Length: 460
Ligand code: FAD
Image 1 (cartoon, protein in one colour):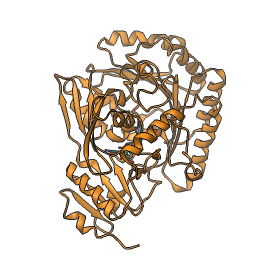
Image 2 (cartoon, protein in one colour; image 1 turned 90 degrees about the horizontal axis):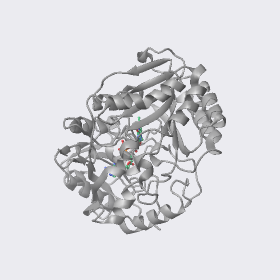
Image 3 (cartoon, protein in one colour; image 1 turned 180 degrees about the horizontal axis):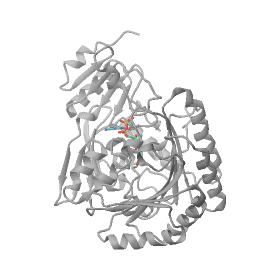
Image 4 (cartoon, protein in one colour; image 1 turned 45 degrees about the horizontal axis):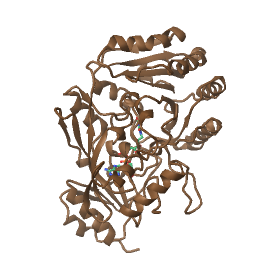
């Protein structure tokens, strides 16, 4: 195929176009998941919304596939494309806080840490994820699960509006009042509908320091701790969000090389004593072997595990929602955690409920609001020679849990799809009715499926 004349694009943009062969091209095409090694024809680091419009027009004229990149952390590698054009939003990383209105306007290429640092200045926080280098846009468009989930819901539940360059190159605003169908689809439908150049969120008060930390359990106490976690989670105040994590600790944590269970929690209320009281029943029912709780600012807590997830590792993840955490499920979790003896791979059990569960099913495109737990198995490792073993582990574990699944899957915790027959939606992520609605939104805003590097919704 003839190479398109990319110099024509260079003349139309203010940002930087890095072509295959240019110095820095390999850096420009790298994404977090090092197992996905795609070779675009160029990476455009946009400097403005106009650059996005120019890039989409050029890609259309040159029949180039387009990948949209926010923070480059997509596990399935959707932030890059073979033989196409990457539109890298990293240059649009501004964060404007309106402390009086408690709103935050965030550029389409900002990272979570950009937002956390800016809002913390005003004692505010937006519900985002748990690793501060992740892109705000990619995380939010899929849903956004993090340490404020029970207090304020998903990231999308605090989203007030988004500015979007559509497939036709038009800049539109989506909110509850303007283009509400698009706004609905953006909240859980991933990057299917356009390039999001900015997002405006409701921000919420967060104390400084924040009462957050980990209760840590060695293998002998895992079963007791899991069953106590289940009981404890039933009466927790919404201000407390908790995640049970099984992981082999990295050497710099100085906790040995055996796998550990960490019950992490963050209390978003102003009264730390009430937070202490909220974790007391778990301490009593399942006394931890160790505790790691120290005063921290919100940005410190939000970036505490950043180094555990290094850029460029090889990765394969699977996730599911489930409702029971009884002896039978605890058996599976404990057995799999004991098998997981290498650095990297871990799994999180997110306790859902609270504000997340109060959003009616169907108000956004995010599925399974009634789920009690969400399991995310995040396999990652350094060497290619481990690919087959590690992927087998993640798949086997996910298969073990399939019988307990309540059917929810979160697009942002999914790896590249296992092959599915052409034209068949690859995984039942959304449920029939939501998928039908998403298909209709797609047909309105991207009928030619320009934005297909995502958990793809076919125009319907
Ligand atoms: P990118 O690879 O840049 O983009 C991913 C996709 O998102 C793109 O293909 C595109 O479809 C879409 N997209 C990105 N930016 C835009 C934009 N501006 N406009 C339109 N579409 C866009 N998720 C959680 O919910 N909570 C967590 O705590 C969490 N932790 C994570 C930790 C790590 C280490 C990793 C690797 C992932 C984590 N995730 C988490 C998953 C994360 O939400 C997804 O991987 C998400 O896709 C990352 O977004 P990104 O912008 O960094 O990715």
